[in-house]
Amino acid sequence: MKQVHVAVAVACVNQRDILIAKRPDDKHQGGLWEFPGGKVEANETVPQALKRELDEEVALPTSESNMAPLLQIPFEYPDKHVLLDVYWVEVGINDALLAHGAEGQKVRWVAAEELARFDFPAANAPILTAIQQHLAVTSS
Ligand SMILES: Nc1nc2c([nH]c(=O)n2[C@@H]2O[C@H](COP(=O)(O)OP(=O)(O)OP(=O)(O)O)[C@@H](O)[C@H]2O)c(=O)[nH]1
Ligand SMILES: [Mg+2]
Image (cartoon, rainbow, N blue to C red; front, top):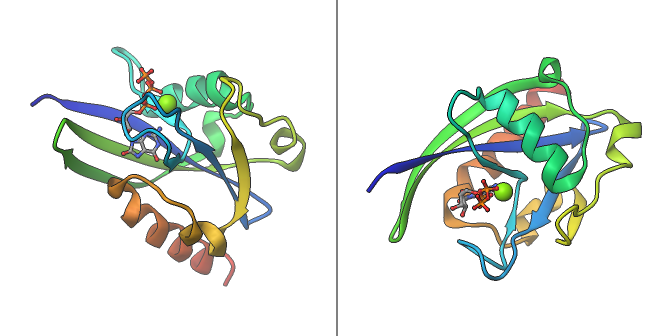
């Protein structure tokens, strides 16, 4: 099965709150919460894909200079193979206020320590660990 390259954003404001969105029921892994993002198109870098997806999906303005790679997760769902390319995205408070579900989906800013209460796709488990580690390191 061909591997799909997916750009995923951990968008963070105030060194604490992370943006999550609910996947539409009719999509792959529908009904679960996700970190915003989507497929990297041909001739696009991951930061370029993130800037595009964050604008399209959640109306969040971002700059590539505020993005840094966090981790990569290859994962094989029974029906789809993905490579999640996860970036940390620092968001300013004024930009954070603009975020909303531009495709009609629910979005929420959630304190990092509350993320475990939400249901994410199986591939996402290492992201939650990486977020806690990143915040522990950057706040010390
Ligand atoms: N955006 C995003 N996708 C994820 C996450 N976790 C995860 O397994 N995926 C998987 O990555 C794949 C690509 O995501 P997507 O459906 O957002 O792609 P897209 O925005 O380009 O939309 P499209 O499917 O309408 O073209 C999906 O199969 C999705 O299930 C996550 O946290 N965020
Ligand atoms: Mg998407």
